[in-house]
Image (cartoon, rainbow, N blue to C red):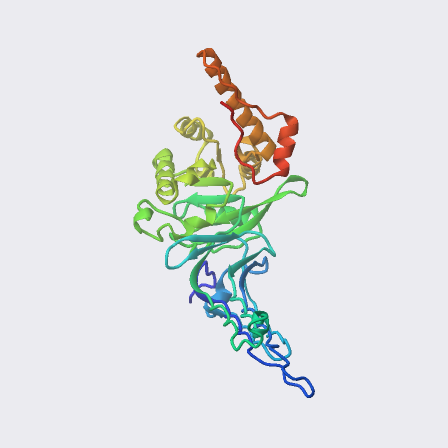
Length: 390
């Protein structure tokens, strides 16, 4: 039976065309030469994308792949304006990325609930003949047509939003770990590729805090070349702030398997290597303390690791502490640079440049913005360059 988890959909969208303006002449008893009174046409309907946290897949769009907005109404007599076309809203789950199907161009990213993004703009309605009346042309017999509609085929890709992403080979214990730490109940069996679709689970932590963990199907060596399930599901951990690599403890060479997984991520997206990484060695109930110590010495020094067993529960509390510490570390946060800080840094660079020029004996003066100038700069957002006098 086909899965209900749909994370890739191609749909055709079309906005509405604008209504045409009216060429009506006013006709009424006892009103000779009433003149033009044609109304404007209504605008065509827009096509919007709207984030909705009630959806978690794109299943509802699988059988509704044509989204057409309404056309604008034509203008009428007595200056009557045509009705606007009906807008269409495409509800998508949070974490949906939109691309142009023909060019592959990135269009937008819907990450928040209630976020609205205009995908296609409806055509404007044409003006009626009353707008074209002049002293020399008091009875114009023409009006504007409405603007045409816009059509576009887009690709919607869902990327799950989670804090921790599980990466490992098939049968590494990812689904077992997720079921042990959260209320999620993914399919668990003793054969490879049991997990055929991503799963999310909320892991409880101390003081009522929690974080989201994402389990994706296992990858194998050569997945970047299409082996196994390929790298199709790796996009679901692109947004994760932390990657948890899982390697079974009964593996012949743990470090080699970790490097193979790292290489597959590099082939998929090199930027994923910039994320924080933690290694969990599963099935530690099969290893004694002496063997665990020997395996730890062979692992990279800069890689935090922990031995866990989802069956006995050993090491799970330590794993949650390690994940929470890594997620909230300063190195895992993006420093926000304000506009004022940016100006200060640029002034420091100019000051260093001026000192260098003075050391070389060249008389050049470079104006450095003071605090008042910085405030003026903040008020004028269009100003982007510092003034330099030579």
